Image (tube, rainbow, N blue to C red):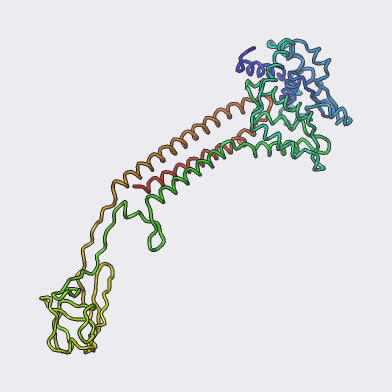
Length: 459
């Protein structure tokens, strides 16, 4: 058995040989060759005089024993769709038209006849090889994505919709064989999505045109050409788990409801607050930064004010002098009617004592001494431990993303080469089939960017 790469080259050379000199008949001869090798039937339809029989004759040059091909009636022609039974017998049905391109037509009538300079192909296929190849074709696998395409089409073509024809299990089995034959001759061990381009030739009929058949097949191919969606979705779930770990480990909810770095880990700045000072009698008071004379029962210069002091007569509030002694020039400052309506206010780190004097009812506002801002360090040991865990998770995720990216790119590169090299399919759909994988690669790049942003939160 020859190597798969050399087999592909050989079949390509045979196709080039039997199509030599013919115009717009590459597809017909490729399918005819595929039918001849696989042992399946091809019906070529079209108006009289457009080269149907020439295609039939030309494909004979690909085989050493063409009489066997003719005897089996694998390739037949008709001017129009024949009776149902004969039409249904043919697995492959190809409708060809007169030359469409006018320049090609002029070349056709100007050149010498195509049949004048063709002979048996140098690499013509022997009966012995056909037997060996049949055994090899039987070993070809149908990939999971192609299985999904076939199942999708089978559900749609189950006879439940009037216009869409019913396709029997027997016909699906024959379709699978022709797909395996295509994969084998293209040098592969399994059927891929590009081979599925042959399926439309097996489905159409009078009520369901080839174009409709082609569309339903291409839609099934495209809808099942997402090999990396589940993987990327799984990676996104892993990143979400990582994000949840970061949020839970390194952040807490602030009073405003926003997420902020956990003070216990990263440390925090203890804000300046009004600085309490204990007076000589144990009363807590606040130091006025710029003491000056004020009017109360009489004129006094308080250095401290307190709202916690209570006199024997149940008065509230007191003034204190620079020696932290309570101002008691007379009993009036001790009676129940003396009340300082004192408020301590903080604005942008500045503290103020604002009060209404209990006697003269004058209102006063003095700036008071504040504590210094202070950085309180966090639990560095715990922070290091959590960062180590986060880094390990990050590295594992990054490696997963890189591996998946390499896998996607390798898939795209290999499939693109394989798809474009297909000898029997319309390779123009190649970019559409691979579009999902390309999008997966782009999405993976976005996922990696998101991961980097989350990782940056631990700094």
